[in-house]
Length: 112
Length: 114
Image (cartoon, rainbow over all chains, first blue to last red; front, side):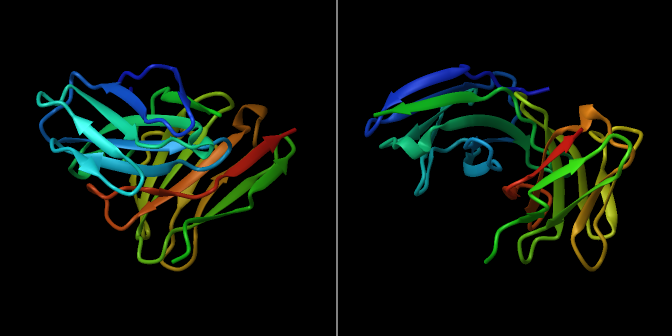
C-alpha cells in the first residue's frame, strides 16, 4: 500500500509555479522521497528524489520538511506540457525497496 | 543512449491466446521491473528481475503469468490464456542497480483482449 497522501487534483496557471504537496508521516529514517510523473498514456518519468535535504535539478525542486513527514514538489514555471499525474513515493534505500509503490497521485492541470 | 524499449506498443489478443511482451533495458542496466496499469488505475508492481534471476515476483498473479530476463536478449513478460481482465498497459522499467537508483520507464505495451 502507498505510504503517501496527495490531493487528487490541482490546477495551475501557465507560467506560474506549481506546488504539489505530499504527506508521508510514517516515513522511516532510511526511506527516500521520490517523485515521478505520468503524462497521458506515456510511461512514468522520473523527476527528482531526496532524503532530507532540499534538492533541485533542471526539472524541479524538492522541499522536505525538517521532520521529513511531508514534502513539496515545485515546478517553478509550469507549462502546458507539465499537465500530468504526479506521484510521490517513499522507498527504502536497501535491497528490499526495489519496487515503486504508486498511489493515486495528483492530477495537475496547467491552464493557459 | 537509447531509452527503455518495449514492443509491441499495442497488442490485441483473443481470449485464450498467449501474449508476449518484450522489454529491452537501457544500455548498462541489468535490472528490470514490470508494472501493470489497469484502466483508470495506478501502476502496480508485478516482478523484478536481474539477468537470469527473478528477485521479487510478489506482484505477479500466481497463474498464467511468467517473466524472464535471459543472459542475452530482452526481458519477456508472458501471459498465457489471456482473459479480458488482462487488458491493461504493461510498463517495463530498468535501473543500473537495485537499490537507490531511479527507475527509467519504457513507453508501455497496451494489451487489449477481445
